Image (cartoon, rainbow, N blue to C red):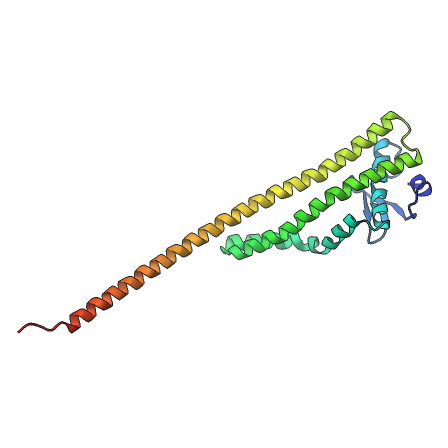
Amino acid sequence: TEVLFDDTDLDPIPVKHIRGNLTDHYDPGKNVVNLSDAVYDEDSVAAMAVAAHELGHVEQYQEDSTLIKMRSFLIPAVTLSPTVSYICLLLGLLFNMTNMLWVGIFFFSLTIIFSLLTLPVETNASKRALAMLDETGLRKTEADIEGSKKVLRAAAMTYLAAAVSSVITLFYDVSRVRQEAQKDKAREEQRESRQQKQASRKTQSRTTSQRKTTKRPKR
């Protein structure tokens, strides 16, 4: 990371070691890059690619990327959206409230939008990472070039898989809500039909009673 900061236009920021595996990330709130056990102080193509990828995110924020702006705008809403969505969906199913189900779908949709925006953000960070590695001359051999591409491509596929999974879940939830809405409509129609029949019977009974009272006996 020192080479990447020194030989590029990036403004230097702190780089810290964080415990765990696959915990590498850039924290824009604290403006610090956190690198996991497998990346921090490791001398490998994979570690180099992952570190450069996180610096790609740093470059996005320092250049005030439009994609980053859009994703950052959604972060406050997305923080609570999954919890609110699950609560609304659960209440809607338990108490047969279709409107509550649609509220749950709405909040879940926010997480889908965030996931879809994450894809181009991550892809762009990887492109920036490869450009920085080439600019600094850290990718010296064909193995370095192919290895770094492979690592970043695999990382991108995880985000793609997460986005696809979320979209499939959304379609499933929407289909469930539509089924519940159709059931509610059918129940409402049956209720109205019963009320109309009851009203019709009462009217007929009232009419029959009136006829009997107005009919005079023959002498």
